[in-house]
Length: 289
Image (cartoon, rainbow, N blue to C red; front, side, top):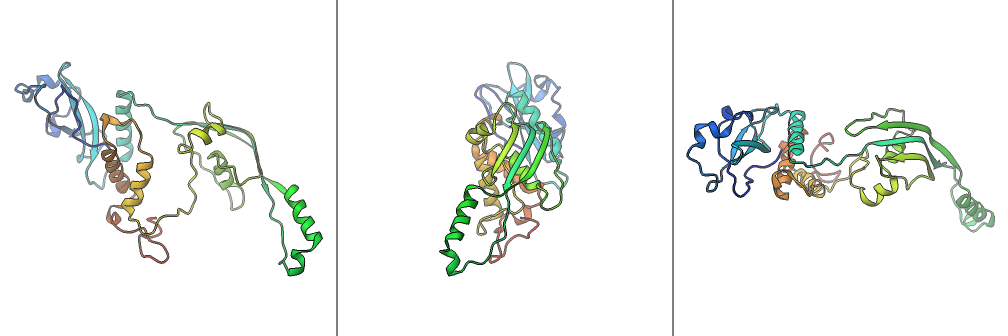
């Protein structure tokens, strides 16, 4: 998922065919290395990844002092059979090799109770009712003592890192409220009681320091209709580019590779340059949005 062509001083990379890609093979024993000077040459060694189709290639780095090579990065070419899960596992293994830590949270909730303000029936205001003393008193009383009701009550559970929780319920049963509460979006509710913990972090810690790591995605996304699909996704990637990247790649290289993979996963390559659009501007279809 990462770009090619990154090198370190004093190390060499060499172009080989996919048939020579075995990571267990001693690179120094192959004839192609006999005439190469590790201190003078810098080339790219690409090879087919074990978990990906033939056009998904790895960048391997030659380690002259050890006579071996290791995988640096993966890049993706166009293929309908691209296996995202296998490539993700491949990248995860390389992150472990380079001691790049994944930042992930689990969540624990116990005796969770969410209280909302009940919707009350109201009559159409008239000129007389606007300035009626009794109407003003009722408004002040409602502000001080709002009518509330329980939306959620007695919820408890654990969601470990990398796990997915499916929430099912009929409209009005509190599914969105539950997801918003776990995503730490509590402002619209009268009260949220009970214990919610994101590993060792409290909801206050998440709000102050990790707002970008715990998010809620509503059913309807609002996009800028005049931006293209490529520009929309690129902006989202740029806001989430990690500071530490595989093989010390640049931000632009990381963004370009992730953009290519996301477009391929969601089948949006053919609308890459098309504007997103809205009711007034023709753009991509509702399903593609």
